[in-house]
Amino acid sequence: MTDPSTLDLSGWGRTVRRTAQVRRPTYDGGLVDVVLAEPKITVRGAGKSYGDAALPGRGIVLDTTACDQIVSFDEGNGVLIVESGALLKDVIDQTLPLGWKLPVMPGTERITVGGAIASDVHGKNHPGAGSFGQHVVWLAVLRSDGNIVQLSAGQDADGFWATIGGMGLTGVILRAAIQLQRVETGWMIRNRLRTHSLDETLQAMEELSVRQEPDPDRYAVAWLDAHAQGGRLGRGIVDEFYTASLLDLPGAVAPFPEARIASTRPRHSLPGPGVMSRATITAASAARWHLSRSSNSQLVALRTALCPLDRAESWPAAFGRGGLVQYQFAVPPDQLGAVRGVLAFLGTRGMTPALTTLKNFGFGTAGPLSFPIPGWTLAVDLPARWLRRPDALRPIDKLVASAGGRVYLAKDAVTDPDLIPVMYPRLETWRRIQRRLDPVGRWTSALAERLGLLP
Image (cartoon, rainbow, N blue to C red; front, side, top):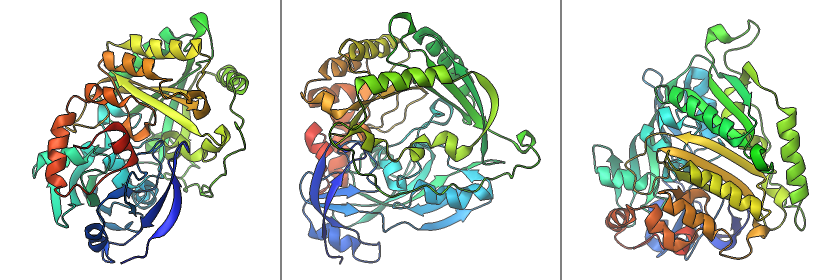
């Protein structure tokens, strides 16, 4: 059994810090013994959740990153069996040069497979591909009583879907089988459109959504200039991507580019408020819009196109010691008024987001706590120091809930807990299944305790 280490932990947004006893066992090095010895455990992967989803409430933290092996990969049918602590980066490094890619990629490849499943992450191709969990063939899960069970859509479907999007609260995901997607190259074609108003941005995204629905290889995302006022509010940059074929590549370009080696050295937060202020955000937003131009058929490396956060490891540090809050929500397709309302609310209170992105969502999943629903998802990055009052974003919470929408639990740090049952109407169903999978009440997290997720 591994000896515990006392570590200072935070989420990627650096808004909350917790000192905790951390254990990092391997599967054959005492994992079950660790679980059975501790009354309360928070499961943690790479720690890239923005808020407190992977921070402890009570008890120890179980770090899964030592369980990081690719068990097998069938090059014929693209089925990967992998341990949950492996990074998506490790999977891509091994499988992309063989002509296979993950069918769903979030904005970073530096999260674990287990974290991707527990958060049921989504990408820019959701209308056609759905979320990460929809490509999981089966899961091996360690329950709180020490038993290991295999879950799939055909074998304990309730437990399977409660674990996908279940925020690590149903058990320790040990291994997963994932269906990958065949590709000819590791490049993408990007078409870019600069828009001049929110109406124009929304129209462009709606048109792209129609193309995305039948095509899981069609990606779309819009950056919005939230500082602009009046009729220019919501002007932006709309990017569409799709995987390049061999015929799309110039003769001198290799089908699969070499992986860029990104620095993983932690960046210390800048002192005080950092460099994020209303003035710098406004100036940067205006510059980004003015310097961008509409263009077609630009060749971009797949990993660069789909994982922009991996080029911004210092992003949270720029927000100073208080860190950043990313507020991400989804609303149904006929509730665009909620998107406009959120932007208007932030603008009237002088809280111009440092980053604002809009994506299309397609079909949802059977997961009771899975975030995506058909419609729209908007994400805004805000300096946490602007939200010192706990009710600073309550009007937005109420607006989202009344529109039939929900916040993304994997990124949450501020949502009103009273609205979680409204946003997630199948919460009680999930609690019932969670009780069955966690018969001794062992799993917890700061997020679960703050929002009252557990029974």
